Length: 323
Image (cartoon, rainbow, N blue to C red; front, top):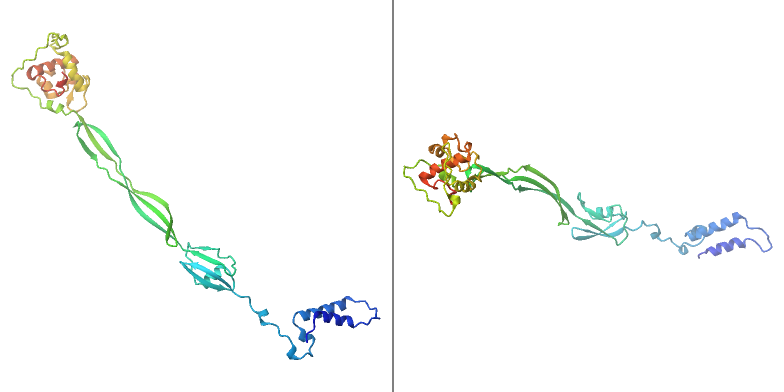
């Protein structure tokens, strides 16, 4: 037989008769409330100890069991693992799944997050590697004029050598797939050596004059200028042994040979406006005027040119086509 809370309250009230005008004290009310709590908590057997054991109601054991573990799904390395943990955190779930995290691995949600039944945890494997490569650096090439080298010819003065640079590149992979690369550093370990090329500036035709020697005395008659061209008429010789014949022709040749610079001396072995070499100058009486051709005046150089012209014509001059 069970006694409900209402019956307990009714029993307390029935202990007073209708004629008794006894007020309910707080103590009496408290006793009645305590009896109701005992009934609600399953303590009926303690209140009604005389009740047969067969009729007593047992308290379910489930009311005193430990709360159930939290079961979740853990995704790692392309595989899903179903695990349970009493704590219900991400860290506890990974421990239950026997998963060890690498230095750069990522977990979602965070390790300290609380999980509910049916949640899932994702582990992303992150690998970071660095690779060093060597890169060749091109060398520059410069050209320097060389008056001792024949025009049109070149020579390597300094051979170029490539430089070397070391590049360090960092690569990040997520679950085995490249996620991105980053340049960490660039260090030049060997500087490039620039190449220097000498470029000849000496006129090629000048070399034909370097071998000028006095020819056998076989005079070559100079061509007589046309009477209709007064500019080519022989000029009269002036005092001091000067011969200014064909002065205009020599000016044209000088323009080709030296751009009309009668005092030029580039150090290439040829001197003056008509580019005499020293041997030819001396062989044709140039020392009558100066030790070197470029030290003589225009008129004096033309005079020596006429002496050579009387022997060999224009053959010694590479710019004879300018005549």
